[in-house]
Image (cartoon, rainbow, N blue to C red; front, top):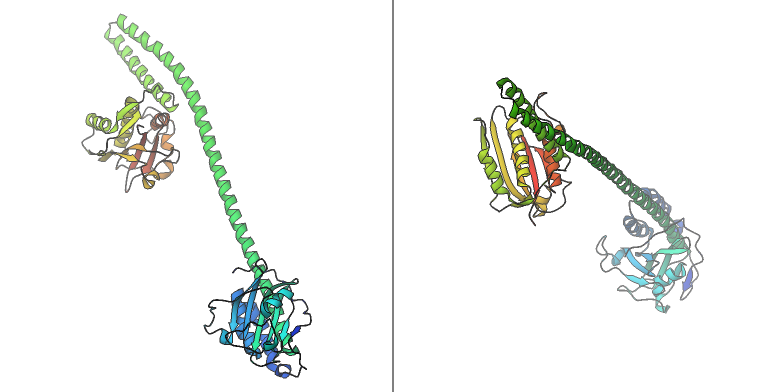
Length: 462
Protein backbone atom coordinates (compact mmCIF):
# COMPACT_ATOMS: atom_id res chain seq x y z
CA UNK A 1 0.00 0.00 0.00
CA UNK A 2 1.39 3.35 -0.97
CA UNK A 3 1.60 5.94 1.82
CA UNK A 4 1.82 9.67 1.22
CA UNK A 5 4.08 11.39 3.75
CA UNK A 6 3.98 14.99 4.86
CA UNK A 7 6.34 15.03 7.78
CA UNK A 8 7.48 17.86 10.02
CA UNK A 9 9.49 18.09 13.20
CA UNK A 10 8.05 15.99 16.05
CA UNK A 11 5.48 17.80 18.15
CA UNK A 12 5.27 17.41 21.92
CA UNK A 13 3.46 14.27 22.97
CA UNK A 14 0.41 14.46 25.20
CA UNK A 15 0.10 12.29 28.26
CA UNK A 16 -0.32 8.63 27.28
CA UNK A 17 -3.69 6.98 27.44
CA UNK A 18 -3.53 4.24 30.07
CA UNK A 19 -5.75 1.26 29.57
CA UNK A 20 -6.65 -1.44 32.08
CA UNK A 21 -4.95 -1.21 35.46
CA UNK A 22 -2.61 1.61 36.32
CA UNK A 23 0.35 0.80 38.53
CA UNK A 24 2.83 2.82 40.51
CA UNK A 25 5.81 3.36 38.17
CA UNK A 26 9.09 2.07 39.41
CA UNK A 27 12.60 2.80 38.20
CA UNK A 28 13.48 0.98 34.98
CA UNK A 29 16.88 -0.19 33.82
CA UNK A 30 16.72 2.37 30.97
CA UNK A 31 17.00 5.23 33.47
CA UNK A 32 20.55 4.39 34.48
CA UNK A 33 21.67 2.48 31.34
CA UNK A 34 24.40 4.44 29.52
CA UNK A 35 23.78 2.38 26.37
CA UNK A 36 20.47 4.25 25.97
CA UNK A 37 22.14 7.55 25.06
CA UNK A 38 24.84 5.76 23.10
CA UNK A 39 22.20 3.98 21.00
CA UNK A 40 20.33 7.21 20.32
CA UNK A 41 23.58 8.99 19.45
CA UNK A 42 24.47 6.24 16.99
CA UNK A 43 20.96 6.47 15.57
CA UNK A 44 21.33 10.22 15.06
CA UNK A 45 24.62 9.69 13.21
CA UNK A 46 23.37 6.78 11.09
CA UNK A 47 20.25 8.69 10.10
CA UNK A 48 22.36 10.78 7.74
CA UNK A 49 23.23 7.82 5.52
CA UNK A 50 19.90 5.95 5.52
CA UNK A 51 18.75 6.25 1.90
CA UNK A 52 15.03 5.46 1.97
CA UNK A 53 11.96 4.93 4.18
CA UNK A 54 12.07 1.13 4.02
CA UNK A 55 15.66 1.00 5.29
CA UNK A 56 14.73 3.51 7.97
CA UNK A 57 11.82 1.45 9.32
CA UNK A 58 13.87 -1.74 9.49
CA UNK A 59 16.79 0.10 11.08
CA UNK A 60 14.52 1.57 13.76
CA UNK A 61 12.89 -1.79 14.51
CA UNK A 62 16.06 -3.88 14.62
CA UNK A 63 18.94 -1.51 15.46
CA UNK A 64 17.23 1.03 17.71
CA UNK A 65 14.17 -0.36 19.47
CA UNK A 66 15.72 -3.81 19.53
CA UNK A 67 18.88 -2.52 21.27
CA UNK A 68 16.95 -0.53 23.84
CA UNK A 69 15.63 -3.57 25.67
CA UNK A 70 12.23 -3.98 24.04
CA UNK A 71 11.13 -7.56 23.47
CA UNK A 72 9.54 -6.87 20.11
CA UNK A 73 8.60 -3.99 17.81
CA UNK A 74 6.18 -3.52 14.92
CA UNK A 75 6.14 -0.38 12.78
CA UNK A 76 3.12 0.63 10.73
CA UNK A 77 2.62 3.35 8.15
CA UNK A 78 -0.69 5.17 7.96
CA UNK A 79 -2.72 5.91 4.86
CA UNK A 80 -4.97 8.83 5.73
CA UNK A 81 -7.12 8.32 2.63
CA UNK A 82 -8.07 4.71 3.41
CA UNK A 83 -7.75 5.19 7.21
CA UNK A 84 -5.64 2.06 7.53
CA UNK A 85 -2.32 1.05 9.07
CA UNK A 86 0.01 -1.30 7.19
CA UNK A 87 2.85 -3.25 8.80
CA UNK A 88 6.21 -2.38 7.20
CA UNK A 89 8.83 -3.64 9.69
CA UNK A 90 9.04 -5.91 12.73
CA UNK A 91 11.40 -7.25 15.38
CA UNK A 92 11.48 -10.48 17.39
CA UNK A 93 9.24 -13.50 16.88
CA UNK A 94 6.99 -11.44 14.60
CA UNK A 95 9.87 -11.13 12.17
CA UNK A 96 11.23 -14.64 11.47
CA UNK A 97 12.10 -13.90 7.82
CA UNK A 98 14.66 -11.14 8.18
CA UNK A 99 13.63 -8.08 6.18
CA UNK A 100 10.56 -9.66 4.67
CA UNK A 101 6.99 -9.27 5.86
CA UNK A 102 4.77 -12.17 4.89
CA UNK A 103 1.10 -11.18 4.81
CA UNK A 104 1.64 -7.78 6.48
CA UNK A 105 -0.99 -6.77 9.01
CA UNK A 106 -3.51 -4.16 7.88
CA UNK A 107 -5.39 -2.50 10.74
CA UNK A 108 -8.20 0.04 10.27
CA UNK A 109 -8.04 3.19 12.33
CA UNK A 110 -9.88 2.69 15.62
CA UNK A 111 -9.56 -1.11 15.63
CA UNK A 112 -7.50 -2.68 18.39
CA UNK A 113 -5.00 -0.82 20.53
CA UNK A 114 -2.80 0.15 17.57
CA UNK A 115 -5.79 1.36 15.59
CA UNK A 116 -6.97 3.40 18.62
CA UNK A 117 -3.57 5.08 18.81
CA UNK A 118 -3.80 5.99 15.13
CA UNK A 119 -7.33 7.31 15.63
CA UNK A 120 -6.59 9.41 18.75
CA UNK A 121 -3.07 10.47 17.72
CA UNK A 122 -1.99 9.87 21.34
CA UNK A 123 0.47 7.37 22.80
CA UNK A 124 -1.11 4.41 24.56
CA UNK A 125 0.17 2.22 27.37
CA UNK A 126 -1.77 -0.91 28.37
CA UNK A 127 -0.74 -2.38 31.70
CA UNK A 128 -2.67 -5.63 31.34
CA UNK A 129 -3.95 -6.74 27.97
CA UNK A 130 -6.10 -9.43 29.54
CA UNK A 131 -8.25 -6.69 31.05
CA UNK A 132 -8.49 -4.59 27.86
CA UNK A 133 -11.48 -5.15 25.60
CA UNK A 134 -9.64 -3.62 22.62
CA UNK A 135 -6.85 -6.17 22.69
CA UNK A 136 -6.73 -8.43 19.66
CA UNK A 137 -4.89 -11.57 20.66
CA UNK A 138 -1.83 -12.30 18.54
CA UNK A 139 -0.11 -15.59 17.71
CA UNK A 140 2.15 -14.87 20.68
CA UNK A 141 -0.11 -13.61 23.51
CA UNK A 142 1.23 -10.64 25.48
CA UNK A 143 0.28 -8.94 28.78
CA UNK A 144 1.28 -5.29 28.20
CA UNK A 145 1.63 -2.99 25.19
CA UNK A 146 2.88 0.47 24.28
CA UNK A 147 2.00 2.40 21.08
CA UNK A 148 3.53 5.71 20.01
CA UNK A 149 2.24 7.56 16.92
CA UNK A 150 4.45 9.11 14.28
CA UNK A 151 3.06 12.62 13.95
CA UNK A 152 3.29 15.28 11.27
CA UNK A 153 1.48 18.55 11.87
CA UNK A 154 -0.93 16.77 14.16
CA UNK A 155 -1.67 14.00 11.64
CA UNK A 156 -0.74 10.38 12.26
CA UNK A 157 1.54 8.99 9.55
CA UNK A 158 2.60 5.85 11.36
CA UNK A 159 2.75 3.95 14.64
CA UNK A 160 5.54 2.26 16.60
CA UNK A 161 4.17 -0.59 18.71
CA UNK A 162 5.74 -2.98 21.23
CA UNK A 163 4.30 -5.76 23.39
CA UNK A 164 5.68 -7.58 26.44
CA UNK A 165 4.80 -10.97 27.96
CA UNK A 166 4.66 -9.44 31.47
CA UNK A 167 2.05 -7.05 32.85
CA UNK A 168 2.98 -3.46 33.69
CA UNK A 169 6.15 -3.65 31.59
CA UNK A 170 5.94 -0.11 30.20
CA UNK A 171 6.11 3.24 31.95
CA UNK A 172 7.43 6.81 31.53
CA UNK A 173 10.95 5.64 30.68
CA UNK A 174 9.77 3.47 27.79
CA UNK A 175 7.40 6.20 26.68
CA UNK A 176 10.25 8.71 26.59
CA UNK A 177 12.41 6.30 24.62
CA UNK A 178 9.79 5.55 21.93
CA UNK A 179 8.74 9.22 21.81
CA UNK A 180 12.33 10.24 21.13
CA UNK A 181 12.76 7.50 18.52
CA UNK A 182 9.47 8.52 16.88
CA UNK A 183 10.58 12.17 16.72
CA UNK A 184 13.91 11.27 15.09
CA UNK A 185 12.20 8.86 12.69
CA UNK A 186 9.64 11.49 11.66
CA UNK A 187 12.35 14.07 11.08
CA UNK A 188 14.30 11.68 8.82
CA UNK A 189 11.14 10.73 6.93
CA UNK A 190 10.52 14.39 6.28
CA UNK A 191 14.03 14.80 4.87
CA UNK A 192 13.58 11.73 2.68
CA UNK A 193 10.24 13.09 1.50
CA UNK A 194 11.77 16.45 0.63
CA UNK A 195 14.65 14.76 -1.17
CA UNK A 196 12.19 12.64 -3.14
CA UNK A 197 10.13 15.71 -4.01
CA UNK A 198 13.27 17.55 -5.09
CA UNK A 199 14.30 14.62 -7.27
CA UNK A 200 10.86 14.50 -8.85
CA UNK A 201 10.89 18.24 -9.47
CA UNK A 202 14.34 17.93 -11.03
CA UNK A 203 13.17 15.01 -13.20
CA UNK A 204 10.13 17.04 -14.25
CA UNK A 205 12.36 19.99 -15.12
CA UNK A 206 14.64 17.75 -17.17
CA UNK A 207 11.63 16.27 -18.95
CA UNK A 208 10.14 19.70 -19.61
CA UNK A 209 13.49 20.96 -20.88
CA UNK A 210 13.78 17.98 -23.23
CA UNK A 211 10.23 18.52 -24.47
CA UNK A 212 10.92 22.22 -24.97
CA UNK A 213 14.13 21.45 -26.85
CA UNK A 214 12.31 18.94 -29.06
CA UNK A 215 9.55 21.47 -29.69
CA UNK A 216 12.07 24.16 -30.62
CA UNK A 217 13.91 21.76 -32.94
CA UNK A 218 10.64 20.63 -34.49
CA UNK A 219 9.49 24.20 -34.97
CA UNK A 220 12.81 25.13 -36.58
CA UNK A 221 12.58 22.11 -38.86
CA UNK A 222 9.01 22.99 -39.84
CA UNK A 223 10.01 26.60 -40.45
CA UNK A 224 12.93 25.44 -42.59
CA UNK A 225 10.66 23.13 -44.59
CA UNK A 226 8.10 25.91 -44.99
CA UNK A 227 10.79 28.33 -46.12
CA UNK A 228 12.12 25.80 -48.62
CA UNK A 229 8.60 25.06 -49.89
CA UNK A 230 7.89 28.76 -50.36
CA UNK A 231 11.23 29.25 -52.10
CA UNK A 232 10.58 26.35 -54.44
CA UNK A 233 7.06 27.58 -55.13
CA UNK A 234 8.29 31.07 -55.94
CA UNK A 235 11.11 29.76 -58.13
CA UNK A 236 8.72 27.33 -59.78
CA UNK A 237 6.17 30.01 -60.61
CA UNK A 238 8.85 32.30 -62.01
CA UNK A 239 10.45 29.45 -63.96
CA UNK A 240 7.11 28.33 -65.33
CA UNK A 241 6.20 31.79 -66.61
CA UNK A 242 9.64 32.29 -68.16
CA UNK A 243 9.54 28.85 -69.75
CA UNK A 244 6.15 29.46 -71.35
CA UNK A 245 7.17 32.87 -72.69
CA UNK A 246 10.53 31.54 -73.88
CA UNK A 247 8.80 28.61 -75.54
CA UNK A 248 6.58 31.00 -77.50
CA UNK A 249 9.68 32.85 -78.71
CA UNK A 250 11.38 29.59 -79.66
CA UNK A 251 8.35 28.56 -81.68
CA UNK A 252 8.63 31.73 -83.74
CA UNK A 253 12.39 31.23 -84.20
CA UNK A 254 12.04 27.58 -85.22
CA UNK A 255 9.27 28.29 -87.72
CA UNK A 256 11.21 31.10 -89.32
CA UNK A 257 14.34 28.94 -89.53
CA UNK A 258 12.35 26.35 -91.48
CA UNK A 259 11.09 29.04 -93.86
CA UNK A 260 14.58 30.46 -94.37
CA UNK A 261 15.98 26.97 -94.96
CA UNK A 262 13.39 26.45 -97.75
CA UNK A 263 14.55 29.58 -99.62
CA UNK A 264 18.33 29.35 -99.27
CA UNK A 265 20.03 26.44 -101.02
CA UNK A 266 23.67 27.51 -100.76
CA UNK A 267 25.82 25.02 -98.72
CA UNK A 268 27.33 27.82 -96.61
CA UNK A 269 23.91 29.17 -95.70
CA UNK A 270 22.59 25.71 -94.84
CA UNK A 271 25.47 25.19 -92.36
CA UNK A 272 24.52 28.32 -90.43
CA UNK A 273 20.87 27.37 -90.57
CA UNK A 274 21.67 23.90 -89.23
CA UNK A 275 23.61 25.36 -86.27
CA UNK A 276 20.70 27.68 -85.50
CA UNK A 277 18.24 24.77 -85.73
CA UNK A 278 20.32 22.60 -83.36
CA UNK A 279 20.52 25.49 -80.89
CA UNK A 280 16.73 26.01 -81.04
CA UNK A 281 16.13 22.32 -80.36
CA UNK A 282 18.52 22.44 -77.38
CA UNK A 283 16.68 25.47 -76.10
CA UNK A 284 13.38 23.60 -76.49
CA UNK A 285 14.75 20.74 -74.38
CA UNK A 286 15.85 23.26 -71.75
CA UNK A 287 12.34 24.73 -71.72
CA UNK A 288 10.97 21.22 -71.22
CA UNK A 289 13.29 20.74 -68.25
CA UNK A 290 12.29 24.11 -66.84
CA UNK A 291 8.63 23.15 -67.02
CA UNK A 292 9.38 19.81 -65.35
CA UNK A 293 11.31 21.55 -62.58
CA UNK A 294 8.44 23.99 -62.10
CA UNK A 295 6.05 21.00 -61.95
CA UNK A 296 4.06 22.51 -64.79
CA UNK A 297 4.70 19.92 -67.51
CA UNK A 298 1.75 18.65 -69.50
CA UNK A 299 1.68 15.07 -68.23
CA UNK A 300 -0.62 12.28 -69.32
CA UNK A 301 -0.59 9.67 -66.57
CA UNK A 302 -1.64 6.19 -67.69
CA UNK A 303 -1.23 2.65 -66.36
CA UNK A 304 2.41 1.87 -67.09
CA UNK A 305 4.17 -1.49 -66.74
CA UNK A 306 7.38 -0.32 -65.05
CA UNK A 307 9.18 -3.64 -65.53
CA UNK A 308 8.63 -3.44 -69.30
CA UNK A 309 9.48 0.27 -69.42
CA UNK A 310 12.80 -0.29 -67.64
CA UNK A 311 13.59 -3.40 -69.71
CA UNK A 312 12.93 -1.59 -73.00
CA UNK A 313 14.95 1.43 -71.93
CA UNK A 314 17.95 -0.70 -70.92
CA UNK A 315 17.71 -2.62 -74.21
CA UNK A 316 18.23 0.53 -76.31
CA UNK A 317 20.77 2.19 -74.01
CA UNK A 318 24.26 2.39 -75.43
CA UNK A 319 26.88 1.61 -72.77
CA UNK A 320 30.66 1.95 -73.01
CA UNK A 321 32.54 -1.34 -73.28
CA UNK A 322 33.99 -0.76 -69.80
CA UNK A 323 30.57 -0.71 -68.11
CA UNK A 324 28.49 -3.81 -67.32
CA UNK A 325 24.71 -3.62 -67.00
CA UNK A 326 23.17 -5.58 -64.13
CA UNK A 327 19.37 -5.63 -64.47
CA UNK A 328 17.10 -6.88 -61.65
CA UNK A 329 13.38 -6.74 -62.35
CA UNK A 330 10.77 -7.59 -59.75
CA UNK A 331 8.90 -10.86 -60.21
CA UNK A 332 5.71 -8.98 -59.30
CA UNK A 333 3.83 -7.03 -61.96
CA UNK A 334 4.50 -3.37 -61.22
CA UNK A 335 1.92 -1.04 -62.74
CA UNK A 336 2.37 2.67 -61.98
CA UNK A 337 0.13 5.63 -62.73
CA UNK A 338 2.56 7.88 -64.59
CA UNK A 339 3.42 9.53 -67.89
CA UNK A 340 5.53 6.82 -69.61
CA UNK A 341 7.51 9.21 -71.84
CA UNK A 342 8.40 11.51 -68.95
CA UNK A 343 9.20 8.53 -66.71
CA UNK A 344 11.49 7.06 -69.36
CA UNK A 345 13.21 10.43 -69.74
CA UNK A 346 13.74 10.70 -65.97
CA UNK A 347 15.19 7.18 -65.66
CA UNK A 348 17.38 7.77 -68.71
CA UNK A 349 18.74 11.00 -67.17
CA UNK A 350 19.71 9.16 -64.01
CA UNK A 351 21.34 6.33 -65.97
CA UNK A 352 23.30 8.87 -68.01
CA UNK A 353 24.61 10.52 -64.84
CA UNK A 354 25.58 7.09 -63.45
CA UNK A 355 27.48 6.23 -66.64
CA UNK A 356 29.33 9.56 -66.57
CA UNK A 357 30.27 8.87 -62.93
CA UNK A 358 32.24 5.77 -64.06
CA UNK A 359 34.83 7.08 -66.55
CA UNK A 360 37.10 4.15 -65.73
CA UNK A 361 34.34 1.57 -66.02
CA UNK A 362 32.26 -0.31 -63.50
CA UNK A 363 28.81 -1.83 -63.00
CA UNK A 364 25.51 -0.10 -63.64
CA UNK A 365 22.75 -1.79 -61.63
CA UNK A 366 19.11 -1.06 -62.43
CA UNK A 367 16.39 -2.68 -60.31
CA UNK A 368 12.64 -2.48 -59.71
CA UNK A 369 10.74 -3.35 -56.56
CA UNK A 370 7.60 -2.56 -54.57
CA UNK A 371 8.00 -0.49 -51.37
CA UNK A 372 5.65 0.25 -48.48
CA UNK A 373 3.82 -3.02 -47.97
CA UNK A 374 5.19 -3.50 -44.44
CA UNK A 375 6.66 -1.39 -41.63
CA UNK A 376 10.26 -2.20 -42.53
CA UNK A 377 9.97 -1.16 -46.17
CA UNK A 378 7.87 1.89 -45.25
CA UNK A 379 10.79 3.14 -43.18
CA UNK A 380 12.88 3.39 -46.38
CA UNK A 381 10.49 5.85 -48.03
CA UNK A 382 11.56 9.51 -48.22
CA UNK A 383 10.30 11.61 -45.30
CA UNK A 384 8.39 14.01 -47.55
CA UNK A 385 6.46 11.22 -49.29
CA UNK A 386 2.91 10.41 -48.21
CA UNK A 387 2.55 6.94 -46.63
CA UNK A 388 1.49 4.31 -49.14
CA UNK A 389 2.71 1.70 -51.60
CA UNK A 390 5.16 2.80 -54.30
CA UNK A 391 7.13 1.27 -57.15
CA UNK A 392 10.86 1.72 -56.81
CA UNK A 393 13.24 2.13 -59.75
CA UNK A 394 16.80 2.26 -58.42
CA UNK A 395 19.93 3.06 -60.42
CA UNK A 396 23.26 2.32 -58.73
CA UNK A 397 26.78 2.93 -60.03
CA UNK A 398 30.23 1.97 -58.77
CA UNK A 399 31.79 5.29 -59.67
CA UNK A 400 33.66 7.89 -57.65
CA UNK A 401 30.48 8.73 -55.73
CA UNK A 402 29.12 12.00 -54.40
CA UNK A 403 30.30 13.45 -51.06
CA UNK A 404 27.58 13.17 -48.37
CA UNK A 405 27.35 16.94 -47.99
CA UNK A 406 26.52 17.25 -51.71
CA UNK A 407 23.92 14.47 -51.94
CA UNK A 408 20.97 16.85 -51.58
CA UNK A 409 22.55 19.58 -53.71
CA UNK A 410 22.55 17.36 -56.79
CA UNK A 411 18.84 18.16 -57.14
CA UNK A 412 19.43 21.93 -57.17
CA UNK A 413 18.92 23.69 -60.52
CA UNK A 414 22.12 24.03 -62.57
CA UNK A 415 24.16 22.13 -59.97
CA UNK A 416 26.79 19.90 -61.49
CA UNK A 417 30.01 18.15 -60.50
CA UNK A 418 31.15 18.29 -64.13
CA UNK A 419 33.58 20.78 -65.60
CA UNK A 420 32.32 24.25 -66.46
CA UNK A 421 30.51 24.20 -69.79
CA UNK A 422 29.52 20.53 -69.51
CA UNK A 423 25.90 19.44 -69.32
CA UNK A 424 22.79 21.36 -70.20
CA UNK A 425 21.66 22.98 -66.96
CA UNK A 426 18.87 21.61 -64.82
CA UNK A 427 19.85 17.93 -64.73
CA UNK A 428 18.28 16.11 -61.76
CA UNK A 429 16.25 19.17 -60.74
CA UNK A 430 13.88 18.45 -63.62
CA UNK A 431 13.68 14.80 -62.54
CA UNK A 432 12.73 15.90 -59.02
CA UNK A 433 10.08 18.26 -60.40
CA UNK A 434 8.57 15.55 -62.59
CA UNK A 435 8.45 13.05 -59.72
CA UNK A 436 6.82 15.59 -57.40
CA UNK A 437 4.23 16.47 -60.05
CA UNK A 438 3.55 12.73 -60.48
CA UNK A 439 2.92 12.21 -56.76
CA UNK A 440 6.23 10.43 -56.23
CA UNK A 441 9.74 11.34 -55.12
CA UNK A 442 13.42 10.85 -55.85
CA UNK A 443 16.14 10.11 -53.29
CA UNK A 444 19.92 9.86 -53.56
CA UNK A 445 22.21 7.96 -51.21
CA UNK A 446 25.82 6.84 -51.00
CA UNK A 447 26.27 3.28 -52.22
CA UNK A 448 28.41 0.85 -50.23
CA UNK A 449 31.33 0.52 -50.64
CA UNK A 450 31.61 2.95 -53.59
CA UNK A 451 29.34 4.85 -55.93
CA UNK A 452 25.90 6.42 -55.68
CA UNK A 453 22.31 5.16 -55.72
CA UNK A 454 19.41 7.23 -57.03
CA UNK A 455 15.94 5.82 -56.42
CA UNK A 456 12.66 6.90 -58.01
CA UNK A 457 9.35 6.23 -56.22
CA UNK A 458 6.32 6.02 -58.52
CA UNK A 459 2.78 5.87 -57.07
CA UNK A 460 1.28 2.46 -57.73
CA UNK A 461 -1.95 2.09 -59.66
CA UNK A 462 -4.94 2.08 -57.29
